[in-house]
Image: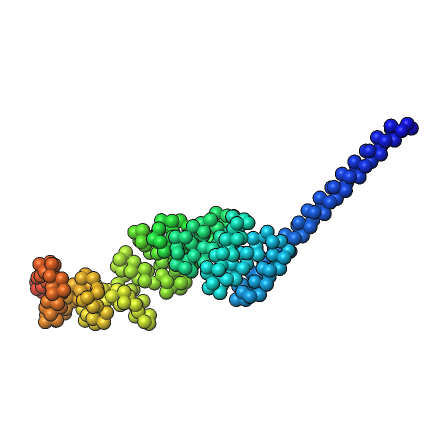
Length: 334
């Protein structure tokens, strides 16, 4: 074998050996990278669980471990931001979360906690923007969608609140908090029949009843004219709100139980702050119950309070008295 052939063989062997070495190094590097990711994922989960059990200081230490392993990991800053958020140190939390998002602008956990932080600061429009980005990046997370829905609701964008509540329920069917937002949003959009159907279903199942009850009871009398059922349900509850007491009075009025209507209206109505519709209802109840002096006194006070509507109030009073008098003119063969 001549020298040239030997040289070529050696060159081929060296190149093969070099390529093998490079390939091995690349594989080792990939393995190390995968191992590092797994370690960071494990630490992040640990930190998250510590935060859920109200241990922000311990979570911060876990964040430091992640930083030592990889200073360019957004998880370290995310956990620090979340730990600060849980301690209500909102502006400090924002600074940490900004660092996480500088490393990875699409890091949905950081986007979500940033939204929570601005939400806590009552900056609902800003919170909504971050929840929206989080929901786009973590499209299968129902809680991102729920927080987005709630933010839209608070800024009175009921169309989008409805849409996001429905998306939440597609991802988590029995997440009833989202149903509460959906019911309220539909109500404010004027889609009262849909809201009533959902509220009735939840009331029957005794789910989130305190949150949906005010709208449910309002729609019960508005759509179903269910005055007797409304009275029954309201009388079962303790510590009725002012609006619920007015609904109770109105239901008694609709059933012609003037005395009970008067008692309930008088407990809550204040001429200075309540709508004139409610005051006129009480005057009407006085007339039908033949408490004429009380009716006239309240009418006088109402006219003093709003002189510009004097004629309207007097006409109402006259028409109600007329109806009361004609009530007695019914023909009966017995």
